[in-house]
Image 1 (cartoon, each protein chain N blue to C red):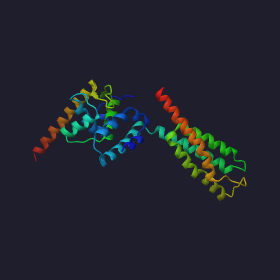
Image 2: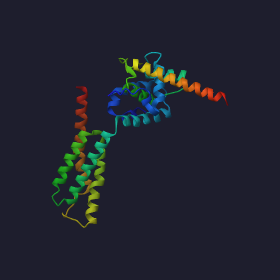
Image 3: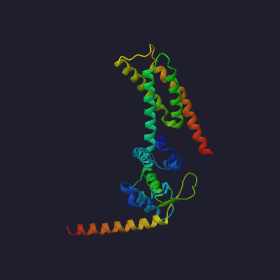
Image 4: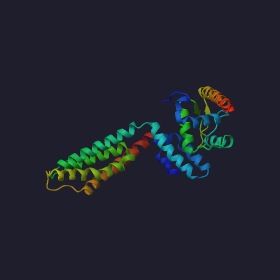
Length: 107
Length: 160
């Protein structure tokens, strides 16, 4: 059953899940497109086990949803809950980044 | 590395198996990919919950102990041991076809162990004890039939 716990409930699996969501923020993508996109834009290569572990968790939480399969590939997209959760999470990260940068500037 | 997909839970394979295979076809083979897939299998099982694994392990252990106990008390008439082997082997293998091999493997321990305990206690209700190899061979047939039955029934349920 889907558990709508948001991104915070992902615990130590949060990082790959957020990366997948960031990639999907551009539009629907299938697994290969997500990994290629992340490798090119962020420099992080997600393995198939990690990628589909993240996809399964995000689907369970209703943050992403699948679209009809194209051959063996199935595209995914962010849901409205997913967009809202990603916005909140990125804003929080931004605050952390700003606070960290301020703290480092004084050194 | 495709064989590693067999390690994932059935439900997971039905949902994501084709997609992951397509992804594997499109990406170059690397040692780290193999490690990542294996780690993903452990993660998928853990996420599915360990309840079903514990239940299967408990049934396996209970049937093993029951057969060991019957063998311990068996007189020359070993029909009850044979019947327990047939029922437990077929039933367990039909319920958990992928664990069927483990049932047979455990018999190698249950039957000799009960005999060792019997010798240690100087307890010999019968003159002739069935040999462990014989009992395991007896169990192989219903185990194989049960696994075939269970796997077939699951396949039909999926297709239907």
